[in-house]
Length: 305
Image (tube, rainbow, N blue to C red; front, side):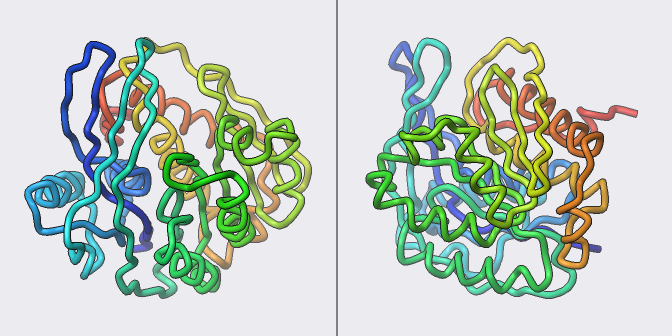
């Protein structure tokens, strides 16, 4: 049975809403993607870094409850990282981080269908250097997917983050970035122009998410596809992009496009397959934003039959 390996941060979100109420729940972009994949029935491992403290136990239990398998050594941190998330009146979140990041040893083999990374874990040193090396080695076995998910409060200036982000982008087959990510990183470029530049440099697929305006994909062959966002009443946007990413990976997996041996097929993805994958991802993200926190759906919720 093929598997997914996700590498990146798992932490505790300390969420303050617009009324000043505070709550804590487990999060972290790569951890959310791992949970999203596991809830869709995919065999998923997570290489991460948290502690044996009470918050670490919460993180471990949350991952285990969704079927995510931790890579041994992922619980070796001296403390569990936190993200202070502040919600505005519309449910949109801004973040401040207290983060430790180290990558435990991972195993790569031909069972690996996809290696995913993103956000802070792919940019914060020294761990980001290890992530980039693993991504390069993983290409021998697997499709590499990358979610930019920029966090300016911890990544520094765009100039400081650019080298690490572009290094990971150059090693990825599938990239997701929001229009806000591209505007922050390349203030002189329209986000879609930035996506076209990236798609011309090697990745099979670059998807730009645009919140309520939906998502637009650009492929290495020049194909462009737009999918609108489903109508939904938003509880908050926490985990929306992570759910979309998990849904996109899952749909490409179902289409038989993941794995190193299928890289050429992924490069040649047709419009119907791409549109279907993006629509599936958008549906999953819509369910997540309809309820509080990063709480992606299970496959049973999506297909109750």
